Image (tube, rainbow, N blue to C red; front, side, top):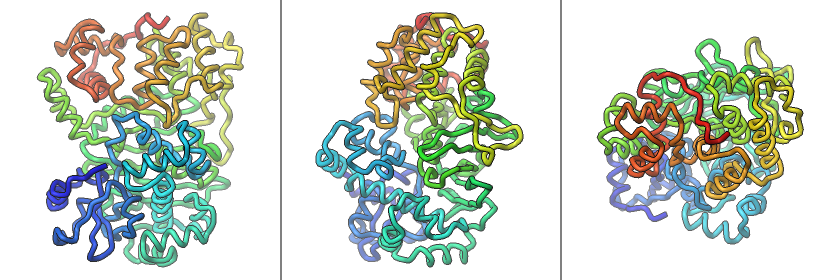
Length: 520
């Protein structure tokens, strides 16, 4: 990725936090790198260099600024609309694939040789997959050291390091200090104490508290985002789709179970207070190694790496959408923490209301879901994991009352394809290939494909144009009364058509409607 030096200098001088995550600023006179909004006095231009990622700056020998903590800003929004190889690799690294399977495993998932993958990722980001994973591990280690009572050995384990020696070497290289000093300095500054909500810097970066709770580690994480964030829309999407047993809405927060690489977990999300730049997440994990994967999936669920100002500016160019953008800035489509689960729930939602779809999903959970360990249970909270695709495919779905035979056959066909790998909806999947594979499943039509693409794949340009609720809202806004008319009008919204759909949904109430019949 080529960075324009003069434009980067202008962004740094503006101290605008909107540019955080797009690039980092390296100061050759001090050997540190900062986020663009670092409050320190801007160095002379001759001393400034710019890198597309923290990993690239670290690779060049710069250490992270202890004041602005550039390694823990919201992720770069440039991956959101992209489905190319590098974007898929970045998503897999964020999900912890390199930590679990190595660079070879990452390359195998993407169908490239290790050498090809290294070359392409380095050309784009200035650092290869291993360096990206190392930077992510270092950031996880820092927030754990600064704000938990976990031992140094446990922090190294939780952050994904293979040995304490590698952990020590990385902390020294990235932060120019030892893990013990990093922890002691943070506590002296009062950035956090076990048992309470903590933060770092100005309170907009990730902070963690933790304590052992039986056999589960309890961790509090602050997930930063770029404002604006339209909280009512996200709350409506989460609260309106609660599946009892897997999810719960209580005391003003959303809770759900998580199927993570090393074991189950439970999360509680709380809406940010006015003025906050983070979402508060309380995690209970059976294995602390899943902290990075869990926070990455929550970020994708809430689309916290988006650049909402850029999206809103683009959509507001359509006169019909401009009033909606002005009324509801920062609207984001809901993603997922489990793509296979979301695909199953979308199929259950064919031709029925949202409430009926959640009822059938709850029946699946009661019949096939695996119970959570006792350490993760709490009164009124989640009790089960959502059943895997393999479990649903092998089950006798005749036990589900009210499900038409055609829907049952579609569900079995889809879950079989997911379990056998014929349909891949994971963070490293090809959106084009996934769409084609979904369309080949009997009973899966355009509405199902596009809805899965939007929520499970995270394609921001997905357009479920035949959704009856969307069509009613579009007609009211003068955007067309049919799917073909809406699709034609939506051409000018690319690559953010999925955001436009959610913008229509957030624009005001309308009568609930079942989904179209075309997927039957």
